[in-house]
Amino acid sequence: MTQERLPNTPSGHASPVPTGIPHQRHGRPRYGGGGNRRRHGSPKARSRLRRWVTRTMLLLVLALIVTSAGTYLWADSRLNREVDLGRVSDRPPQGRGTNYLIVGSDSRAGLSDRARRDLRTGSADGGRADSVMLLHTGRHGTTMMSLPRDSWVTVPSFIRPGTGKRYPAERNKLNAAYAFGGPDLLVRTVERNTGLRVDHYVEIGFGGFVAVVNAVGGVDMCVGRDIKDEKSGLDLKKGCHTLHGSKALAFVRERHQEAEGDLDRARNQQRFLSVLAHKAATPGIVLNPTTLCPAVKAALDTLIVDKDMGLWNLASLLRAMRNVTGGNGRQINVPVSGLGIPTSKGSAVKWDVTRAAKLFAELRNDQPVRT
Image 1 (cartoon, rainbow, N blue to C red):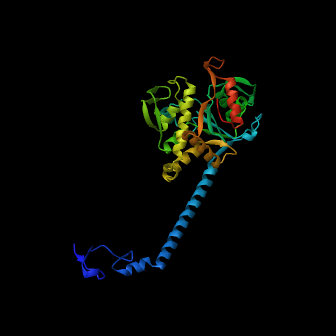
Image 2 (tube, helix red, strand yellow):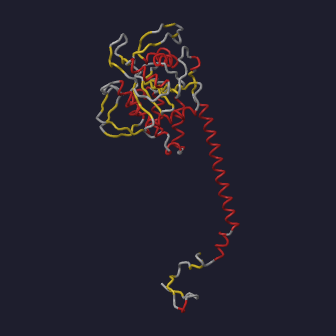
Image 3 (cartoon, rainbow, N blue to C red):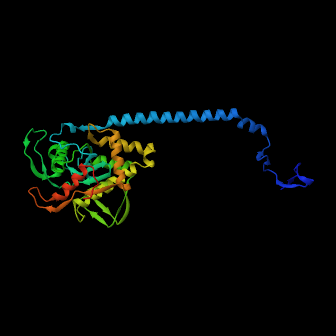
């Protein structure tokens, strides 16, 4: 490496400055070929660069706004708002906070014969409420409460669709209300037995559930023991797994290997839906069009909501479910006093009347849940 003599060095001795490294004068580097610096670093050049960057950013933001607005309008127009809560009769008064009735139906609509076999859904026509949850949001966070489908409740009097025949109020299982009168009767039954007013209704069938889970790339779940259930088709070893469509459906439906049957299944359903909502809201899904678009389409193709439900309400529901996973909320079952209670309609789940009434009052008044 050669050395240069600096002209201003006292005594004229050489100063060991390696060649190839810019010299320093007044704290600034001195480069050879100053023309390039003047050409690219001049005030005019910097001003042109700033204008170009500003215009580019504005165009990108404008494109994002236009795309988001277009996607929002498209998605909002695709919502199936066939449930009219305004027509539901004998409703309890409006409470505080917001209540969402979330229903997973065992409807096989849209499933081919092969899909029914692969998913082990059976071949029954019509549909029943396979899972029923009431999600409350308010000042004290989110409470996700499962109502076991075999709950022994009072089904209000109703006129059966298709036949026009009137049926008196009777004691029956909760999921029978959906089978007899669809969403309207299910809402009336939930409201009659809880005293809570349902503000929004959201339903998804087997096919839609599988499509949404697959669209987000599966959901990670951990189990504390081996599970093998021939009826649902679930076969899991102890540990953590990524559950895709068919296994995810088997997981949320499985109850025959659970100690408390419907109650344990309800807990699994809550846990799964909370994790699914959390994953659907992650940047890897929301900011990736190749993942987001199929997930949104899968949901919109199968969701049934009430007439007052919009995408904003769905987003609020998603955030509330995600909050449960994040610790800002609770996952509970309605208090029960007995499982497998013999009834005229087969074995059922009996609610603990006193504890359940206290819980419903806390939710209705938007108080902290202590039950």
